[in-house]
Amino acid sequence: MDTTTRGTTGGDRSRRRPGGPASTRPAGRRDARRPAQGPRGPRPGPHDWFAERLLAVVSGQRPVHSLLGLTVGPAYEQLVTLAPAGPLRERLRPVLRHCGRFHPGPGVIEAFARIATGDRVSAMAFRLEQGADLRWRCAAVEIQGPRP
Image 1: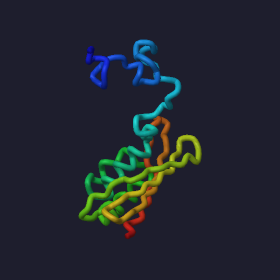
Image 2 (image 1 turned 180 degrees about the horizontal axis):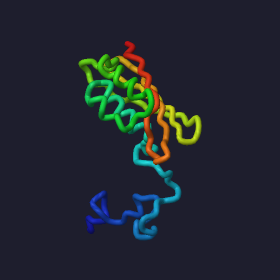
Image 3 (image 1 turned 90 degrees about the vertical axis):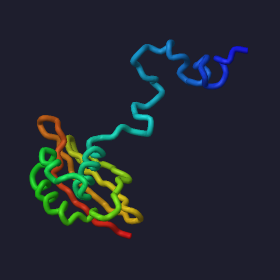
Image 4 (image 1 turned 90 degrees about the horizontal axis):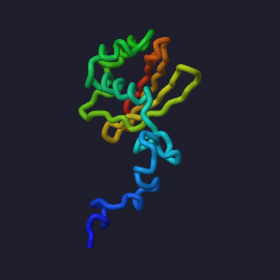
């Protein structure tokens, strides 16, 4: 008996894949039935990326000046005052649990994040604005400290 057609060690892939054998689909084109997203859900946006960096700054893992080119207006001043006192500076490392967004208009994202530190949850909100160079920059930051 030929063992290459049994199990997952090789053989005919058309039985395991809904799109049929890979050779029947044009190269470089995704299956039209599958949404344009990553294997675990929608692709992360600029708000997800910035939330991670912002969390690293306010928890003391990165210096404030690491966000210097990514902030505009009073947002950098807010970070300078928030980071040393750091409502998220504790012995346990905070973890970003969820980050959501709202688009109030073109080129603007108002984002919110839930942060877990042990059994405590904190809230973080920030506003991203897209400049003429199409880069996203933070325009405002607010953080509510941990609550049991």
